[in-house]
Length: 244
Image (cartoon, rainbow, N blue to C red; front, side, top):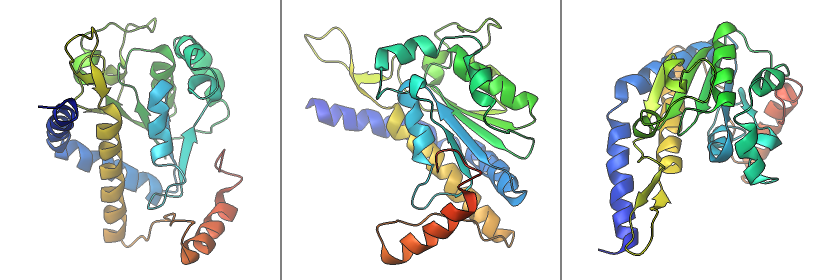
């Protein structure tokens, strides 16, 4: 079997783990629907490659308008990737960063971290809970159970979360072993994490409609009708959502 076919099999097997978490998806969707029904915001963050998940549901066609993505350059990869690894381990960085965001008990905070061990994401979860927000975590259960926390509390992210999801990944994320290579290739966390996130969002949208609430959803700006629709939402939320 060729390497890409083995990778297909790995992704399929890990998606089965995601599909087995239906009750958690429904619970998370209820919280998101409650949040939006009460005019709260969906906050989302991740460090390193996990920042992709913050972008996955932010200003996205088919996505909720009331999403706040915490996209800090020092924690992302496009400017200084190796430096981001240092920053995500710094105590106190999250507290300073979150001063810009008025978290409250109306909100939901979704944090993605494959290892679930680094200080910034753990501190974000702690602060969000102190503010009364629901904290939902997407992590790699196999990986996080194999490591210790880098936070002084000794807690990993899943131990702080109100609800956590397992992305089904391997330790280290890469999933395909190749003869002649010491390390595996083919990470899977992006594929499975995106499915988890979008599953929560689409179910939350249905829940709101069933309550008689029409959710504010972005359309594609590259369709004629979508651009005007989106512009109205942008005008409404430009001063409330950083980065919009």
